[in-house]
Amino acid sequence: MTGLRDWLGVDGFAWPWALLALLLPLLVRWLVAAPASREPALRVPWGERLRRIAGGGQVGAVARGFPWLAYIAWCLLCVAAARPLQLGAPVAPPRVGRDLMLAVDLSASMGEEDMELGGRLVDRLTAAKAVLADFLDRRVDDRVGLIVFGDRAYALTPLTLDRDSVREQLAGSVVALAGRATAIGDAIALATKRLQRQPAGERVLILLTDGVNTAGTLDPQKAAGIARDNGIRVHAIAFGGAGGALSVLGFQLPMGGDEVDEAGLRRIAATTGGRFFRARDTEALAGIYAEIDRLEPIARQGAAVRPRIERYPWPLGAALLVGLLALAAGRRR
Image 1 (tube, helix red, strand yellow):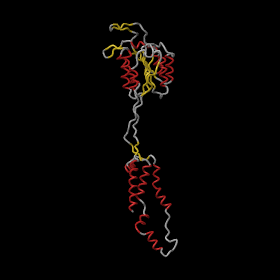
Image 2 (tube, rainbow, N blue to C red):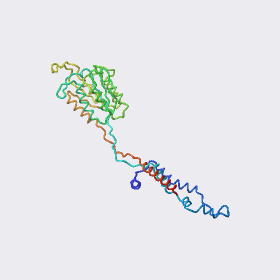
Image 3 (cartoon, rainbow, N blue to C red):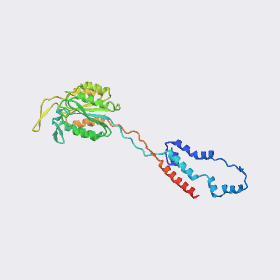
Image 4 (cartoon, rainbow, N blue to C red):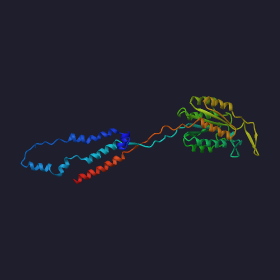
């Protein structure tokens, strides 16, 4: 390969068998051209004069000579037909990440303003959006999908590399968009349906909720078993305080609402081989997503490849030029 590159300036040919056509003109000349007889077939008185006309002069010499310019043009055409190739600079292929589904709770309790973000009090959903947006920025090579759930579960975006679309759909989500209850089992089932057709080993669901399962048609533990059977890891995040709260003049008064189902979420994560996390504030939630980032690393780049560059235009252009020269030389003669 190195010698070929030093000699011809290329690294190989895509169709090397086309070079066999180099010998075709020589073969045709050898087969078709019949040797001239030394003895005349018919003796005539003026035979010597005819011999001088047929064999003498510059025109006869050229006719008997080999058309080297035309043959060179043919050789260049054969080289072009063989498609000479040159290896380009090494290029690293794109990295392959996870197939990652985000399931975000939009139940009524996500509207409780008990989270601090940037020195001000915000509701749980706003805090979750801010942390998720930062998490998405780091998942450069992942295909990410978004599911929201309340009374039912809905897929807002399919698995896609377009993280901007996921971010826009997440930003446009509001509390109670999918209902005021919490259908955790349905969310897991819908994520399983979206992930089961993807390559095994890279299927991940991140489930964020602040309550207990109060709606839906599928029990969360049964849904977790289905996810496990389909090779899906579920990382469950329990977000928020111990229950609902009422904001009065900036003070949070507990209302004794439903607590987060930590035990149920732990079982879901354990069943599927994932992790359970508890976040009571925005800072803890950010730390959890950073931990998930380490648990689900983006795959490294594969071995670099060298693209093959077609170089047939060079011999093709040279063949055209030499062919024109051969035509012009023939006309002058």
